[in-house]
Amino acid sequence: MLGFMLVLFGAAIAAGLAGTGSAVGCGIVGMAASGVVSEDPNKFGRLLLLQALPGTQGIYGLVALFMIINKVVGWGVPFGEINVRTGLEMLAAALPIGITGLTSGIYQGKVCAAACSLVAKRPTEVGKGLVFGVVIETYAVLGLLATLLLLQRVSL
Image 1 (tube, rainbow, N blue to C red):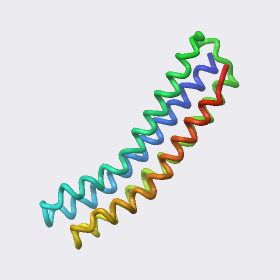
Image 2 (cartoon, rainbow, N blue to C red; image 1 turned 180 degrees about the vertical axis):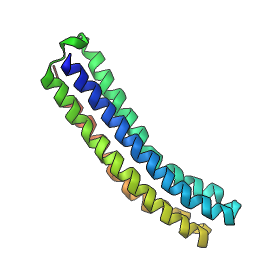
Image 3 (cartoon, one colour; image 1 turned 90 degrees about the horizontal axis):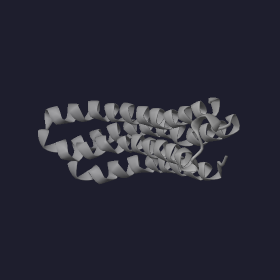
Image 4 (cartoon, rainbow, N blue to C red; image 1 turned 60 degrees about the vertical axis):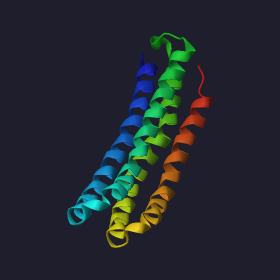
């Protein structure tokens, strides 16, 4: 039963940490965007794109959670028979997206908040601000890829 609990803990870490990074990141951008919109409500649409960008890490964490759970269900083994070693392997596989999702979500929020200042002064430059945020997104994608590759190596 401990093996199954470790699997669940790994799934929770993947979704929980990545989701926390997204929530914090979106909050940081939302605060900056609110200040800009209070001065010029017409910039709302452009700023909404910047605020949504850090939300993707939470999606990646949920993808990892589903992949972990589906892998265990796909084995067709009773949950109580998952050994501790397999549970630890699944937990370790969940760490890359959990850690990169948390970190990149927060820092992407900071970069996108700075891009809100760019949009406040030069509204047509929103694309440049998005590119700065997307560079950080790369590491969240790599974290998800690492998790998926590690999950492929786990077996009973």
